[in-house]
Amino acid sequence: MRSIAVMPFTNLSGNADDEYLVSGFKESLVTTLQILPEYRVKNARLAYPGKEDDEIARLLAVESLLYGTLQRNGDELKISYRISKNGEVTHSGVVEGGVVALFQLQESVAERVRDDLVGKSAQTLIKSRPSDSDAYDSYMRGIFALEHRGDSGNLESAINLFLDAIRLDKNYGPSYLALATVYSLLPNYRGAPPEEMDRLALETVEKGIAADPKIEDAAGAIYGYVYHKQKRWEESEVAFLRAVNADVVDSNAFNWYSRMLASVGRLDEALAQSLAGLEIDPSSPVLNSRTAMSYAWLMETQKALAYYERANALGGSGTTHVLGNAFILIQVGRIQQAQDLAMNALKAGRADTSWVVPVFDAFGDPGDPSKASSALDAMNHASATGPVPPVVELLVRALLGDVDGAMRIAELLEQPGEAFEMDLLFIPELRELREHPDFMPLMDRLGITRYWRSKGCVWKSDRVSCATNKSPKR
Image 1 (cartoon, rainbow, N blue to C red):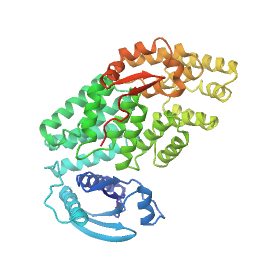
Image 2: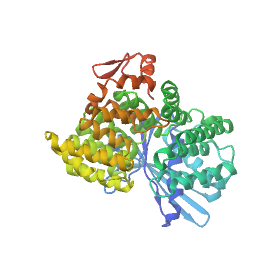
Image 3: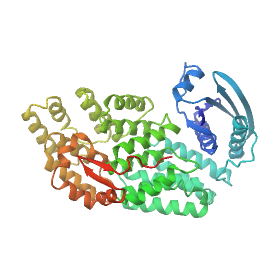
Image 4: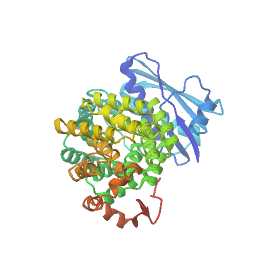
């Protein structure tokens, strides 16, 4: 299969307020070009300053690169693009028009690029078409806010923008998908009630499919993620398989599917899905972080470190990413660096940090039982006086030998939502937890053993062994 990477577009206007247009134009172009059956289209998020085109192409493992610029002058837009192959420009073009015709400009550029790559065609590239320019503008602004969800207030802004887009154009399906995505993320990012957010996500995506049936396959990612959090494992996997095999795939579908597989102990298959996501979105900080974790759980330490470094360079953030990074640093003995990362992440989340120093002191000297005892005393005090993130308490107690305490935390998974990422239950360091007499009964109550039986999987030699070691993928 031939391949091309769409590089970040350049904002020639010099106005930061236009960044949502520049970013959105490029992202929409990637989504549109993914429909081409002859090409694997990769979304490149880095510009690689100082590197030649042929070197960048080798790094991204593609034949060609597509560059673009967007210049706004009042209400007029000028979009230029060029395609480079083997270090030489093979095609280029310019499209101009008004801001109110932004979607039509995107469609025009996509068609020209398609014609440049594969020749003239009558193929329709656009699956869903907005009917209102103001609605599409709100959608683009919302996507930009969602992409920058780590910034304060951006998720809330995204909700309002997507609601505006739907109010102005009730038939544009992608607005519903984006709004449902935000609802799905709110329990993790804002501590919103999981059951209410799951309901809102499903209601939203169902309204979207009714208005725009073309989004049905892509909507599988939302269903899969919600069903995952509801521990409806078989239904979750069916939905994810629909999403990752859709004509147009959001790379986050691979991230969520990877998480689902890891949550039922299928760590090898989880890694395969995150790597499949990187095939189309190699510069995604989320997918690079997910891949790093997958390698860490499989004890491929050097690869885990390499992907964490890549994710950090791409702006990887969030408590899960930072604590996962700290964990792999503990694995390789870089205790102080791991402690600093954990301390900063906890402070950012305004969590209690009184236990951090004694716990990491015990990690640094695992042969000293007195340090382990002091660390557990500190954790007990922190847990008694205020909430400690369950993921932290699970790992600390398990690693310091308090297996009964770790099992009490694991049982929080029976509550609605996801108390912590369940792949932790299956990592090598928590073997003693899996040998606890209450572990398999917990797997029964969470529906995981039923899922294993449905997939021909068995629990053997402290890991899940399936009849086929591959889960279907795109």
